[in-house]
Length: 285
Image (tube, rainbow, N blue to C red; front, side, top):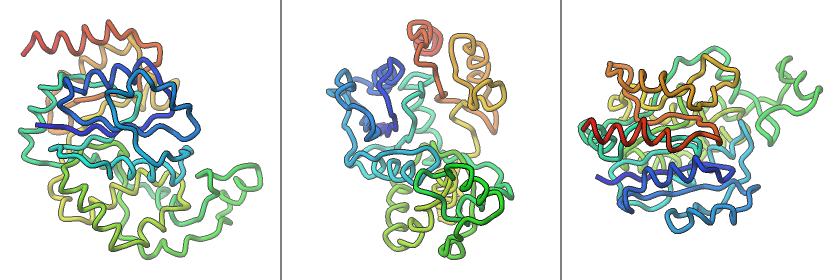
């Protein structure tokens, strides 16, 4: 089995370097990296011979359509992989490459696009046209949003029923092809998201929900993210979280089977990480 890893990042870190080394499997997997246009790409020289950089580079703003655009640019990269994983540069695997491939191979070609409940506030991310930065800037703009005075999105009513979920996922090439076939046939869908706020959590979830692939979506969470503990949301993970991560990794339920976790601290003890999650995993096989 071959996996194509599509990584979105805005800075070079030791964690990103570790991620690339962990998933490259001696060159057997494809690794594509989108580096934010604002970043100095020369800082990524340490991994340049191990990855392919996605072009064109996008100036990604939090919450803006540019996040979706960067994701699509990565998904367009040519690959013969059996699975395609879209992840962030602060992600690390909790299992070995062999274990991840075995799990995906035994899934029967399911799609790992994790869905969450759609809240009443979520449609407003698309119902109105937000400024280019993806969120209202300044007191006047924030007041306009609060009072529902932002311009209405004229394409909102053309959208299929909305679904909400993680903007990180692992999908089959068949679903990837479906995404681009649908976007070519329905250009209004992309345009409807162009002025959205945090639309990335709706864009792909809605696509799979209205597709023939909806019945092939796997309900299990494969990506560990701590939205509960703080003080950051999501929590920035370090060595103090290893116990919780190991406990989560050991759970095998209908809703949980963790392959990866995010988001890790730039200062993570990488030797300790390898010992706990990679070397120990090898010994347990």
